[in-house]
Amino acid sequence: MIGIRGLVVRYPDGTLAVDGFHLSVAEGESVALVGANGAGKTSLLLSLVGILPSTGDVTVDGVTLDKKTVLTIRQRVGLVFQNPDDQLFMPTVYDDVAFGLRNRGMPESQIRELVTACLDRLRIGHLATRTPLKLSGGEKRMAALATVLVMEPSVMLLDEPTAFLDPRSRRVFAQALRDLPQARIIATHDLTFAARYCTRVVLIHEGRVFAEGDPDRLLRDAATMEACGIEAID
Image (tube, rainbow, N blue to C red; front, top):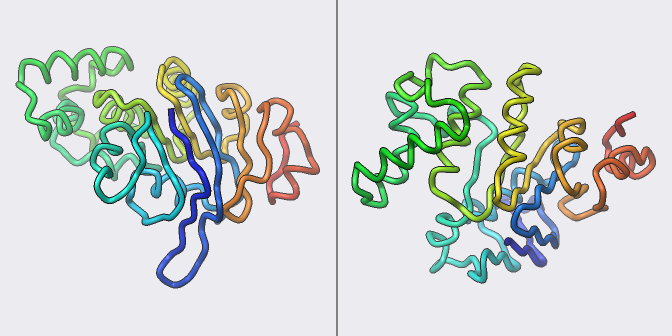
């Protein structure tokens, strides 16, 4: 579980990116974070793992984020970046997925079991020996997800995970997300995806929670969506 209370993110130039944000997400819940460009979605995600400094409270499984606990929080919260190339940098997919486990000093035999199980779970075992440079957009997305999922976080943060995917890749990726047991916060402009695969939608406007509720209802509320600068779905 992750709890966010009164979170504020301000950039060095004074720009207020997140302004008193509140949210709680339980285990197994999938929350879509929806807002116009510049609403604060990515800034919020980056602050939850201490990449951007913030004030307010972020608590994960009873551990509160601060300078002393940031490494513990990063072990419990996995962040999948918007651009998978930011997450894939090793010679093979296997090495990318194994990277975090190796940094923990885990025995190679155990790493092999965990990486193989993770790749098989996402149905990308056939990509293990492939270089990320030669993967399709959908394959890169799945490989990036594997690098986070193998670390067994209790919370997952995903930034525009379906961007640039073709319909089939989008469907496969969405199904993989839906089957995960972790609490998930998914920043997305893909409203059809949010309506179909998320359990709750949070509208963010100027760094604050503007509205939240059932995806099917809220994403079709034209007046509310328009107030956030977003076009409702039909």
